[in-house]
Image (cartoon, rainbow, N blue to C red; front, side):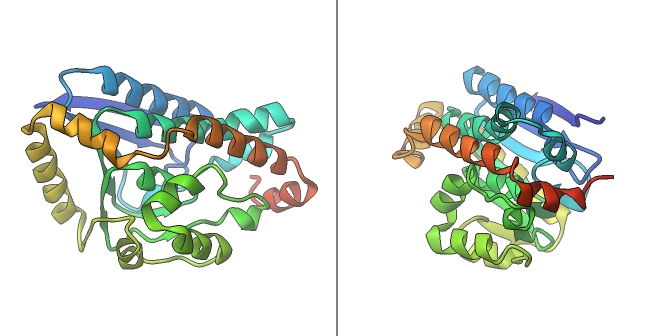
Length: 251
């Protein structure tokens, strides 16, 4: 479980990807790679009409980057490759031919906010507060910023990035466009997730694919853009300021 877990289940033309990690569903490099592969495979799977993305347990949707791996980065190439993991997942979600429904049951931090933003439609519970805390460890949300800005706007991205120590609640995130609906309980949310997925699975697949392309128009440069952003983060993570900030997270 040190590298996390990922399961994909397909039923009635609906694919569900469920990821997990003991450290609040954080994302080490191997899990990021498996997520990328899963989205690419499902994109090409003609039996799949729609994808649901979810995480394990109840309290946290995703704590973002693995601090164990961040603190272990010793050179620029390793840093770039780690942040490319996030870039690759976002690009796989962007280019996936299937609509992706996000199911956010709890808090999302950093890369977890990026995952939610890369979904085409996102449900959440009242417990799904969000935060971009990257400044507090000496880096910034460079890789995920394009996805967050696309979904929430530059003003919301700025507020989240600059106010790096404070949480914004789920209703704030809904108002800004990250979440489509917010529910009091996981049970209520899951009913709506299942209902929407079922409806989408019965629509004309060509219409769904066509609309997916329309929704992501203007992002064709992201393969290059996100790689450049990964280089920025890969360099910053080696700085003395970042190394010092990360020390407190070492076990």
